[in-house]
Image 1 (cartoon, helix red, strand yellow):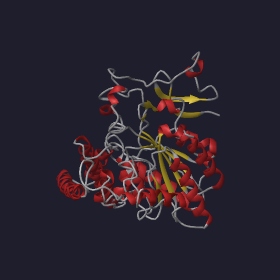
Image 2 (image 1 turned 90 degrees about the vertical axis):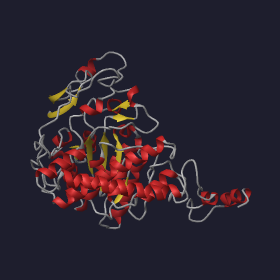
Image 3 (image 1 turned 135 degrees about the vertical axis):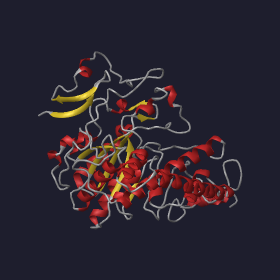
Image 4 (image 1 turned 90 degrees about the horizontal axis):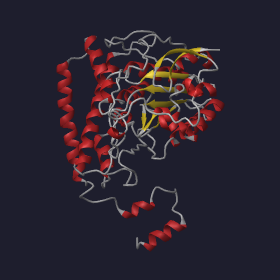
Length: 434
């Protein structure tokens, strides 16, 4: 059997290739230990001309109840709805209502501006750490708008757009980053490790990939009690190398729980190119095929494509057909975190040449083309959000920052760990004179 797929060989060339059992090709002929290298290093120019991007609308949209092995081609292609002129085309254009698209644009804009503000606060020493999601906003926002508010989210650390799209107060998110007395995590989490029980947003974990197994377990419990909710979870491309990834897919394939397993391939896992995690040999979506799971590969910078793919996977899950693996092909524009300097491992202007563009600008242009938005409306929106963010931050700062203000009471370190405090914790609290 052979498939027409997109695969990148170790020389950095990308194209449509028909592959069979010998698909390893030049990689397999390399003698000795082979260590994947990024196609371009600092000082070089990466224009991504080696990356093959299929035409928008080329992928067929099957019924959500189809058999996984009937759609293996969708794990190797790229589901795109917006073409080069940002017009919606193809089977995956499900005619999303304009009000949803406008809400998506607003949520994406707010997410980006919130990120910029908190990054600035780190630079002036008000918070200790931050991670931006610039260029990846469509993945979180479109996905959230395509599922129900009662559905459970097991996020990664670049999914702040989901929390914002669910209506979380900016004040609460800012206080968590500042670790002040209003921090709902009580100073126990790194900044950006948000949590919201009220919004079904599970606590973000710094231990990579744990959320994949947790999401599958939660969905199994939901299926057992015949509930109607689904779970959705996110990891990066590098996290697919973790054992929790494979365990989650194995349980998802075996027990058929209502869960969406999302992989954000933004090309870089901290300083390691996605090739180190196996992205050189095949797509990340293709890993679901071996487990018998339907797998989609999606343009992560196309709001309409992300929304349509999520709707498809959600319908499949709710109809009792189980899990779906989705890979979002995107690019991490910002540094991995405020502790990272990407100029040390990739070309300085690489992000400017990403061929799939800016998700925010693409959606805005599409809405203008269909007569549902204007540049004047967008300018007014930016002005409104600028005032809103400044107001929220001024209040958040009044409760304390990294350099000033009160901290959560020390007695809270003994709370929220066990339902009933254990004898050893009681002794430790007494030793502190509390």
